[in-house]
Structure formats: C-alpha cells, structure tokens
Length: 493
Image 1 (cartoon, helix red, strand yellow):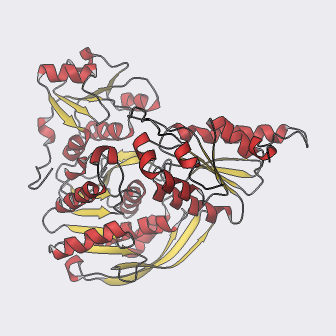
Image 2 (cartoon, rainbow, N blue to C red; image 1 turned 90 degrees about the horizontal axis):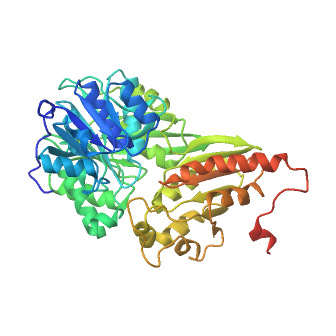
C-alpha cells in the first residue's frame, strides 16, 4: 500500500458483522469493540472455549464449527490473514458478494473519530501499547485500546473508552502482513525495525520499506516516536527528519530526545531516570522523572520510555504518567510468572525472534540473581527458523542450558531440510535438542535447584510447557533422596 492512504471505514456502513475465526486474540478484541459500539456481531471458530463464552455473554452470536450457513444474516464479513479462501464461510461470502474486510480495516472502523496512538515494531509493540493504555487509564484519560495480549492491570486486551474526537485510542499495529498502514495515527510509535516475517515480505529491504510507509501514515501534525537505540529505527528517524516530519526519539543513546539514565534492576523490578529535551517540532519541553517498573529488563524500560514520550505529547503530567507506569504488571505471555515448585520459578514469554529471545533471557538473568537459568524454546515457523537459526542459537546461549523442541509450523507447510536441529547444531554447547516439552521438563527437573529460573519461550503451544515443568519438579520432589531422575545427556558423559 502506497500513499495516499485510504480513510478509515465508517462504522455506520458495516451493518451486521460476522468474524471468521472470532476466537483469535486480535479478532476477539475487534469483535468486543464493535459490540461496545452497539453493532450486531456474530462469529465462528473451529472449537469452543472461554473466549467464545465471553463473547456470547457480551451479546455476540457464536457458531462452532464453521459452516456456510453461519453468514446468512451478515452484511460484512471480517477475516484475518490466517483465513484461507477455501474456508466455507469466506467462500460463501464471496459468492454472495458480501463486503469482506481484513481485521485491520474493522479495527480502523472501531477507532471512529478518536485520535490514535499506533504502536509498531518488530518487538515490544504489545508491551509498549499495553503500558500506554495503563498509563492513560491511570491518568483518567479513559482511553480505548486494542492490543495483542491481555493486560493484567486492566483485565482485558480491548476496551472502548471515550469516543469523542478529543479521546485517544491505543492500538498495537501488527506489521506481519503489511496491514498496519490503515490507522492514520496522530502518534506513531516504532520500537525497532529488524527483518522478520520474511515469508510475507521476502527481503529485509521490504521490511524497512513497510516501516517507512507506516511512518508516512501519520495524520497532519502527527509525531513519530521512535527508539534511538535500534539501528533500523534510528535510520528511519533520520530519514523522516530529512523529509520534514516531526520526530521524537527515546532510548539510552546520549543523543536521544528522551534519555534513559541510571538503570537499575532487582528481581522482577527495574528503575531508571528519564530526562528529556524535546525538539521544538515535538513541543520543546524539558524535564525529567524517576521511573519504577514492576517488570524486569532494559527492554521494558525502553518500552516505558516510549510510553512517557506519548504522555508528553498527549499532555499527561509526567509524574502522573510515571505513577501509571508503575501500575503496569505485565501482559499475558510477556515474562509471565506461571508458578513455583521446589523453589524453582517458571516464567513464560512470547519471544519468537532472536532479539526478543535475548532480551527475555537477559531479564531472566536479573531475576535469577545468580541462580541457574533454564530455557525451553519452540521455534515458530519454518521460514523464520531457516532465516535465523544461528541467531537463535546465539541468543539461547545466554541461558545456562536451553532445550529446543520441534518447530511450531503455524500457517506453514514443512520446508525440506529445516528443523530445530539447525539451531541445536549451530555450535553452542548450552543449546540442546529435546524431542518434546515433557522430555525437556524432565531433564530440567533433574538438575534444577531452589533459586533457579525456567523460561518457556515461543509463540506456539510452548506456553503449555510451564505446567510440564512444574509437574516434573513436584514429581522429582516426591522421590526419595538418591532416586531423582538424571538428565540422559549428563549420564552419558
């Protein structure tokens, strides 16, 4: 998509809306927003679950399984990139000539006349958009928001707040399929720009071009908030400034407009001093504030700095913004604590790119405070595994021991010669193959001790493996001394 970019679709023109695959995180969020707007919403999915039950309670008609007759009363059908043309409901909608919108178009319609803060980036966009929503909510701004994971402090991943033209809508802008160009934001946040989703884009250059286009979608007098610490983002910032755009940079870099200084971390908490001297094009304000977060890692301090930059642009008092950010306790699957057994704490993280994996493990190091860090990693997509196998191995080597299970294929068919062994055979002794999550859990339980950390990592069903680890630890504790299972790899030495 190239400029000029189309306006947001009008809610009034959607009629009765049907979502194919309504149980997905992104789809259910938009469905909730349209229900709160008062629209008639239906949807379908392949299996039932708590998300569908919640939508039914809010007034949606939900069908399981998917069938052509489910769309008989629909005027508009909403799909995500994951829905194939062979889907019976989509095929029926095409045959009837119904309006078919991508999820991103429906989200754009849900924004109405509100001013939008759209958060994009290869990593960190869910946490950053969640922080902004929590911060604005704590400041009394009553924002609307739609993000990619449940926000612990707000109890949901989507909510409709004020809807007037002076209100704010916070949106996670997903670049994975190029659909993040549809929101006409007043503030566009870019956390970083790195190659990913090459199954869609083809080349790293195409990824960078997409982010350039995203920056160009800013509305009149809009501001680009962008991380100075990331090479790709910094390159984009320089290009947009040359083009005359309003740009505000943040990060640990000494030249950033909003600087992160005096970083400290202990356990699952982190702190820093934020100091800013904004360019005249972004308001020209000067000041500083001390920030205390209930989440670990320098990457989260960067995310919070992006949120603070938005606060300065929106007009939220910096002290109030800092207090709001201190209330942020995380988003689902973002270094989320899953439990503890035998003194070993298990966390889960959605990281599925090498940079994200490294950031999660660096945070785990801080939390472990000298304890051993174990990881179970499930690669997501064969194409991503092929592109970044060595980078994944290097990132995983930050753990004391990392187990890699088989690739989670998601939407892809297998690629000949591509497997998890590309990662485990990359030459890092700490990184080993495990045939299943249960095998990895058993091997970890055989050696883990009180004070250690286990991190399950990936975007697939690895999120369920934390339960395996906790079970294995509890089982190992029940064994008599001397009967504990031994890691087969260790016993072979």
